Image 1 (cartoon, rainbow, N blue to C red):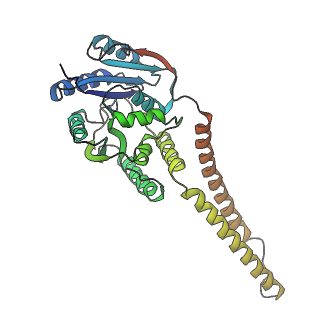
Image 2 (cartoon, rainbow, N blue to C red):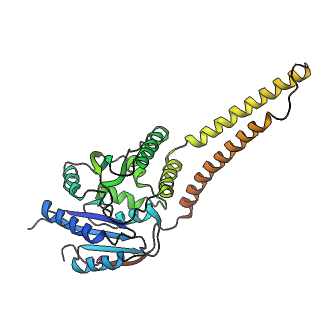
Image 3 (cartoon, one colour):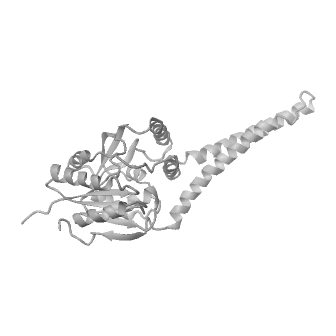
Length: 318
């Protein structure tokens, strides 16, 4: 009786990647069939409502190879929901998320699989060096250092999500029912046995990056509001300290005035009031971020709404 081969799922989120999807698919197929011929495979593209010709190219890829599958979202559901949903739709014994821009090296797939075969349920690829913008790299490093100290859950530095996830972990993701998931935090939080392997992140092969300071800010705030209590507690403590200092300062000035030692004017109130107003705005802004995260989780909206699926009715290898 022939033993069923293990299946490797490659999940690729796309948004306006018309210049990359065809060469990327060819590179993945060549790597899997050349380096890992003993495995079956599927390649799942999930497109986040591209406005260029990405979808036409994905249709052509699916027509050429039944192991290539595609999900077309009804609209753009953001940088977190779409990849998470894509991972949950894979059928393999393990799933490897790969960026569509070639920044995640395809030649690392055999190394990820080798670690998986050693028994690790999660293999995290850590970008120890990168060819990205040096300022962005510096800001990322500062962010990781800060959140690692503040977080209630261990955070994985310079982990973008590229790696390998065993089917058992994917099943856990399917059952979380989180409408605003942050998979990098989930991996650290759940506690599956994992291993980290280093790599150098390459430059984008073609096209324009969709990451900007807004998306980086969104990622930072989602992780902060999901896994840290420090900002709220900092401003609570600061408020208590300033309140006590104000009371003592006011009492001291009242005594000095009654003794005729000091006659306070109003000019000194201006910088103090400006400082207090600034602190209030910052505190309200941080509180608002927590409320927005809580709101998104309580609304229980679906991760994405699918418009179309291609090749999901086919069996592997047919």
